[in-house]
Image: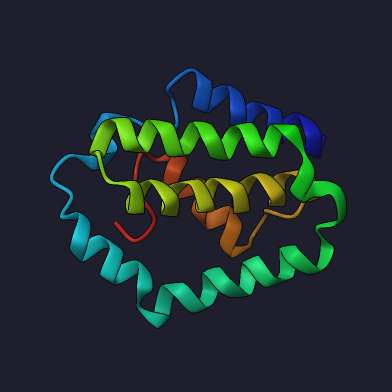
Length: 125
């Protein structure tokens, strides 16, 4: 199940369904990045990341995860021209993908990240 969910995420990225131009309409990138760096969001993100790192094992080497991160970076860069924002989105997708591979996204911060992207919104926006 978790492998299937991670593959679905990659398919959504490849089909252009998860990261769209509309997601970035009217976005003040500098303000958004500042908000992401605020401890309210950043602390939760790092907590989720550290939990993933502790349980990662071979997940970090997973091809689906690598391909998802790469696709997210390229699409965000194409839509915005901003490599820093593309890195943040790629990191989000990596965290989401790792959570999916581990089957740990329900009712978690990672699940909230995924819901934001499924709703066509960057987290916080």
